[in-house]
Amino acid sequence: MLMRGMEIPDRGHAERSLHRIGYYRLSAFGYPYRDFCPIPTPDGETEQKVRCDKFKEGTSFDQAINFYLFDKTLRIELLDAIERIEIAVRTAMIEVLGELGPHAHRDRRSYKDRFSEKGEDGSTPLELFIAGLDQHFRSSKEDFAKHFSLKYFGPPPIWIEAGTWTWGNLTHIIAHLSDKNKMAIAARIHPDLPMKTFASWITALNDVRNSCAHHARTW
Image (cartoon, rainbow, N blue to C red; front, side, top):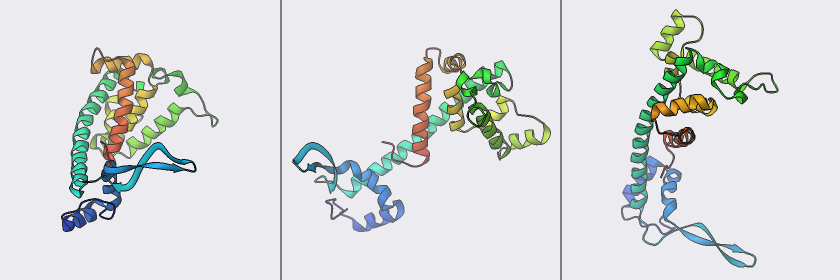
């Protein structure tokens, strides 16, 4: 970093930070401070530019560290907000589908037709998804899931099974639900929330959550 133009007034602090964070991870937070270089072509330089290895003049190690700390705080705040959204969406889904029946989340009528179309192996996407949910529920460490499995036979009702769902499960279900059910869930979240907006937000939040959960640079 020093050889590429970054100012490092406290080398001891820099070395400790690199050992703790890792050079390549911290490089992601130094990337926005790298200078632009023109792309050379056989005919000469073009106007298109890319980030080069050299840092912009005046870039300091502390700027990269502060960016890293800011992004870390942002990820924590985002995960906290997404957790509240996840609980609200899960509750709305339980209410909407639960009114249709205890196992409406397993019923093909709750979803768009293509979710029940058979593939080359004769199975449907819904069947494969339900098989995954069953496996997830059986392997759950939650006390309520263990209690249900020991005391009852058959699949759990949605208000029990939903407690073991991941955010990925939720987004997958929402993506394939019928428009009628999707609209009903969106209305439970907010009466003026359009269905398409709701669905697109869920997809975007899934990407943000994955980024935060894997400690990727978010800003």
